[in-house]
Length: 114
Length: 117
Image (cartoon, rainbow over all chains, first blue to last red; front, side, top):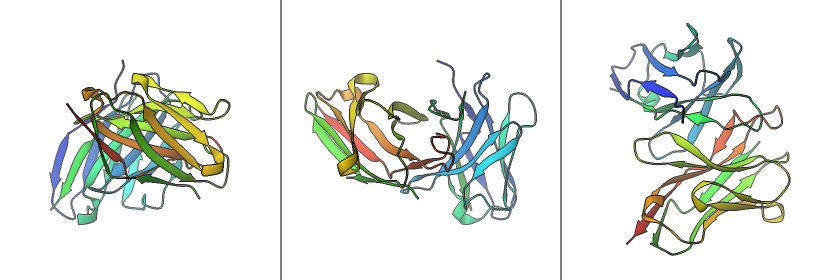
């Protein structure tokens, strides 16, 4: 079965630094998402992206966050100035369509902000 | 606004026993409901989903879930647990304002299932 791949699997950074989390969605998928899970808490929706623009975002997705599809294969999440509370597992997902379709998730990037 | 509550952060069953993982939801619109499973070091994988129609939904690996509107529940069951079922299970409801978009999912906290030999 095709997979969503995320790199790196673990990322350690200092508070205030910028990080970029990378994802390669499944090749024929058109909708892309980022979710995060803080240790011991729920998986939370961050943002969805379609046709080179954000289609929905949560209140978590503030000005410190941005997403980009820089080429035909990658989908990135950038955090401009990391805070301790950004430490979490970040999941990328993709789907063919937005409605009634199956989301394929990557295995996640564990971000640790020190 | 939508929300999901999963009762029990840990459930332990014996191999061959019934698996019951509880999920209750809150939604102001007809909900789309999902169960995802996460095996160690892997991403979330869709087990099953309810959108419309038949309220008993069958998924992969012998799991099924029943949508009960009157109880606002979507419990996950499997008649006979297998060692390979040990994983974390997440219930989710579609949270999008676009009425049915699956992308904006509201997840529960998850239930870790252990299966004893």
